[in-house]
Image (cartoon, rainbow, N blue to C red):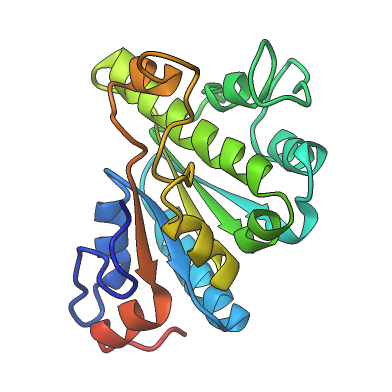
Length: 221
């Protein structure tokens, strides 16, 4: 289950919240909640700049105001991850989102990417408008990330997602059935993503952006 709002399980010393978030994302996806969308944007911008300074790291921005359906998600993913094959407008199956997220393109003359972070702005829009699709997206992000690490032992690519939003996203994250912290059932037996990842549940934590920043004693530039 996610941590209570404002008690995210990790603390922030003055001027160190960015490295602490980075450290938390070594093991968890994060749901960041703030009522003020401007506060969320400033937080994401600051974290984006910090993550971009890390070696062999790729930061991918998803604009939730343009994601109302699978087409909206896929159109953005195609702009973010190079591929020589088209992205099928499905979550699973050959050429779908799951397959696409497994791609690890190598650019000639550049070291391979070791970390890929998705920052999903305004995730509450889809969580409110189409909670079933949002759940499928959250599950496939967590599932593929866990699969990469579990299947390869020492993964060559760490993927994490930071979801940003307001009350609707918080409500989704607190739901006992949310795909943010439970795998969907495929019928009797162990859920598919639990089998391929070795995880009982998606590793996702919930935190309050305002509390996080206030506890650090640092203003966001």
